Image 1 (cartoon, rainbow, N blue to C red):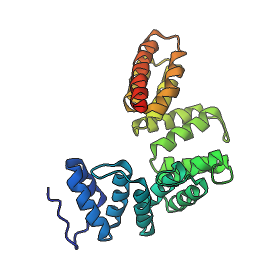
Image 2 (image 1 turned 90 degrees about the vertical axis):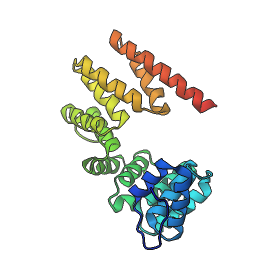
Image 3 (image 1 turned 45 degrees about the vertical axis):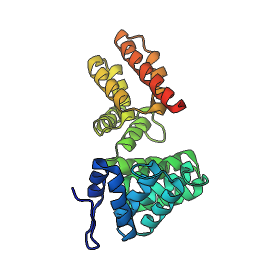
Length: 254
């Protein structure tokens, strides 16, 4: 694959991502050139590789600047990532009010991740007045658009009957959609419902899917939940959860 970009070439995000996977260092050079030429996909991806340190020295401050440039050029995911920088303090101070502003703009433009992240702030009252009902509405919009993490949260609201009528059948369906969409929390939620309904073998499949895909924060919550089960089969899975949890804790502390 050639990494040379001509001025007239319109390199899209998928091309840039493919180049990055093949040869990070050379791809980073191409991405930098694309960004300087004003290609917004390149500007957004430059922000991402600067944030991750992929093929280029990690620089969260510069990453935030490129996300801002791409956002100003109309790139919605860059707008969302700018919000994440403000929310998490990547490349500067934490400012949830500014994060909520960026998420709201992305959400109003219809970006599923913008809807999800703005809903998270609304639900918790960070950087914006708390509005759980409004958050649930945004989660629903994102879920209907195919956002797997939002599907899981809609399922949770329906299962618990919080800020909406309880509907366990609908909750199960949303969990299933989330699980099939690849969200590890949705996979765990769906497995738990299956277990509750006596479908042990199917539950075990989804618990293991969640284990394969889950991160450290998820495992810190999921492991104690599984440990409380009296099922021998679940306890066997629990051993694997503990093993993976210990591995990730070790990596996090090094």
